[in-house]
Amino acid sequence: MSENGREPKYKRVLLKLSGEALAGERGFGIEPSVVDRLTDEIRSIAAMGVSLGVVIGGGNIVRGSLASRQGMDRVQADYMGMLATVINALAVQDLLEAKGVETRVMTAIRMEQIAEPYIRRRALRHMEKGMVVLFAGGTGNPYFSTDTAAVLRAIEMESDVVIKATKVRGVFSSDPKLDPGARFLPTITFQEVVAQELGVMDAAAVSLCKENGLPIIVLNLEERGAVAAAIRGERVGTLVS
Ligand code: UDP
Image (cartoon, rainbow, N blue to C red):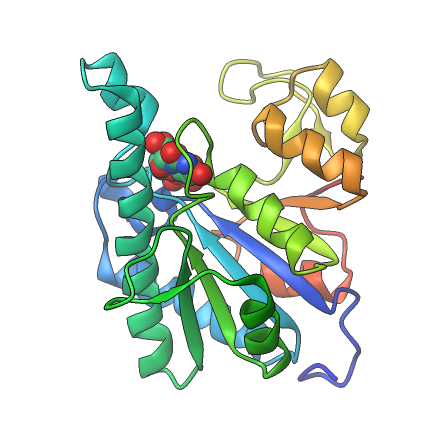
C-alpha cells in the first residue's frame, strides 16, 4: 500500500538514471546537493512499498564512445565507463543508507571488496526483502549502454516498467531545442520510436523492451515527485508500449 493509501500501479520498477543526473549544472562529476535531492526521491519511492531496482549511468565521468573518438581504445574506454557507473552507484548508496534506506550494490563485473557480484536469484531475493538494489557496471560488456543494462535487469527482475528519468518532460515529435513546432507525445508505440528514430533509448534497449512487452516511461527527473506519480499510474511523461 502506498503512503497515501493507494496501491501503486507498478509493483516492481526499474529506474534508469543517467550519470548526468548526479552532476548538476557542472555536467561533470558528482554534485552532493544533487545526489541529496535524488536520494530523497528514491527514498520516497521505496516508501511507497514498491520493489525498486536502479541502474545508474556513468556519462558524468567517462563515456566510452567519446573517449574512443579522442583516441582511446574503445573497449578500454568502455571498461572505464563501466567502472564510472560503480563510482556513481556507491555515491548514491552512501546517501541512501544515511537516510535509512536499505540498499545493495551489485556489479556486473566482480569487485567483491566493494560490492556483491550480480547474481539474478540473489538480486530477486534482495528485492523481495524490500531492499533497493543498485545495479552497477552496466551489462559488464563493452559496446553496450546503461540503457540496455537497465532494460536487461528490468526483464531479469520481472519488473512491470522501466522508468527513464531525463532532463525533458518526455518524448517529442522532434528535438524541442531545435524545432519550436515539436509536439509532446504522451503515448507512443515501440514501432513508432524505431521507425521515427526518436531518441528514447538506444535501439538495442528499445528492441529488448519491444520483444518482451516491457513498457518504458520517459519523464523529467527535475519535476519533483514525477517518478512517484508515474508509479502510482498518473499520467506523467511519455508512455512507450
Ligand atoms: N558501458 C559499457 N557497457 C555497458 C554499460 C556502459 O561499455 O553495458 C560504458 C560505455 O562506455 C558508456 C559508459 O559505460 O559510455 C557510461 O554509460 P552510459 O553512457 O550508458 O551512461 P549514461 O549516458 O546513462 O550516463
